[in-house]
Length: 253
Ligand SMILES: [Zn+2]
Image (cartoon, rainbow, N blue to C red):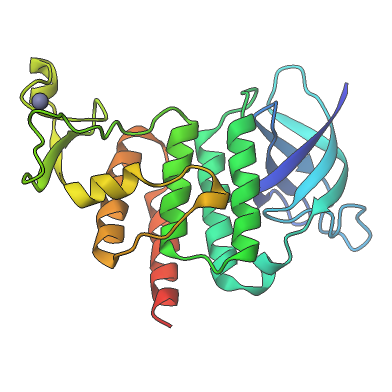
């Protein structure tokens, strides 16, 4: 059977001297991996038809038991050219694609994540990406995955004079004297209340993203999300670190 869908290229890897394995994020079928035989041959019909972060319309032969599907046709719909010229935008886009590919599965309804990735890539084309954008993307992604940390303070225990607040990574919520006895034995980290307030105030739609007002708060959010994501998601720590380090260097220019 042949299936047709719009899809964003989230990974490309060589499969032989001339062929590619291309992984796509689709709105309704989750992650799809296609084989593209002869993709790199001079006369290949696929030359220039896909690249990382392109949105394409693609036709593929559906394999009944999942796995790898041969690509039949592919037409680019959104090339996102600025990602090839502005290295900050390219860095952010690579990280956005890598994270989306790491948190989704084949045959999954991924429309909110597809939409987030699509708008985040467009955002990277039109804004010079900074660390705050990576943070906003991660917070938005956790929200769409239903994994957002519950950072609601306790009205009794977390009085305004209390600057440092304990947070359980395992249960994903703030701890106080009213937490369950089990939660109180879980490993906890300490967060500054300004970091908590900044994460809570971060919008989860790209057109409302704002940068953290203060570098220390941005660093606090980055450390917290790093620990939280490592605990809850299977994501490459190295890819995350590279993206943040490149954009930190860019911020200083
Ligand atoms: Zn309490």
